[in-house]
Image 1 (tube, rainbow, N blue to C red):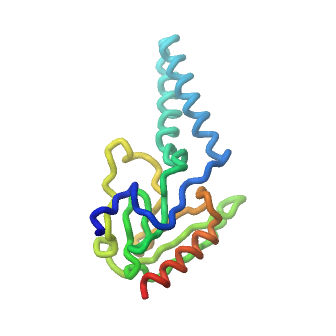
Image 2: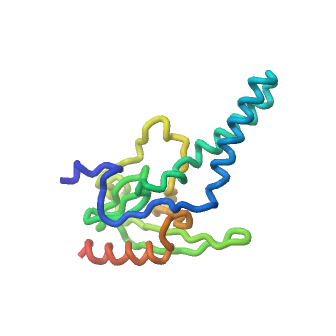
Image 3: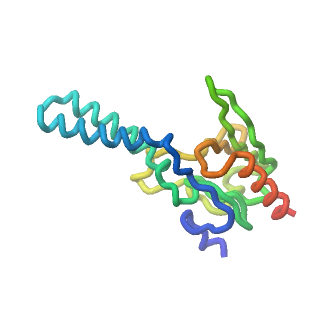
Length: 176
């Protein structure tokens, strides 16, 4: 039953990264990496190769933002799933909060999932072990030392308050 739950086929409510013009810099840095590599090959100068490595590193780190068809976070009857983290069972969640954080000239919304159990017993499925080629890519989550999973919900294709309301509604329904 639960063994069939892998990161690609979870089902239920899911949210993916939105297709937006804000990810245009990822494409630009990929093009710059190709241009700098070509310049390094044509001129033989190593500083072009260093610039190419920096641009390629930025592009590689942000590739998950371009995976708009892949579910990043969501929920089903077993719990809340988070890409590259796992499936958190409903009863292991103490509360789900949507917090506004002021950063410089903008406000960022963060979904905070507080666990009431240790992480090893809270996870139904553990997806933290990623293939080696995804190790240095952007993760949609951060874990704090207070047993709280923090997710920036700004880059997703649905409004932050709708994601929060849906998670709360499913949490109340499935934990009872």
